[in-house]
Length: 219
Image (cartoon, rainbow, N blue to C red; front, side, top):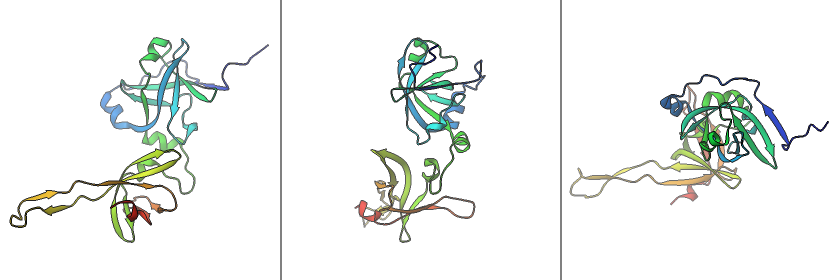
């Protein structure tokens, strides 16, 4: 008997009913802050959606994983995962029709920091984005700014750095009148040419991104 499916592989959740999850919007917004991907168009009539992964950890998305959509704000449990022609297809518990799935098209999906630390195992010299954001960038003892975001362009990650804002007098005869310089931002490619090492913050040290040649990247 032919047991093949149109999918390269498929995994289903062992759960037989939808879990009772808190759908409180403020709880979702505060707890699920790490973006893992975006849902695309629907496939078929039973609630399947194409999923565009934005994480380095594809194994993180498993049957039974809880993800959050912010618009509309709701928690979703992955019911099944399938791969077809290189695309990842997901179904969610309680989303069992094309009409229900249509409500989730283009929704960005998020996970929690706790879930990420539990399920994603890092190798040596690998870091989570959320641990790097907020660190000071230091070169030859000088603080160049602070990491405010990380963007992937092509196959390279770029640290978005906000320089320290400064206050300076604008009218010499009126020292009380000052203006605050606008913070300047610039990018540092996360490659060995610029990033020497990263030390994460801990109770005993502030941590930082230690660089070389990064001064050449801003005026």
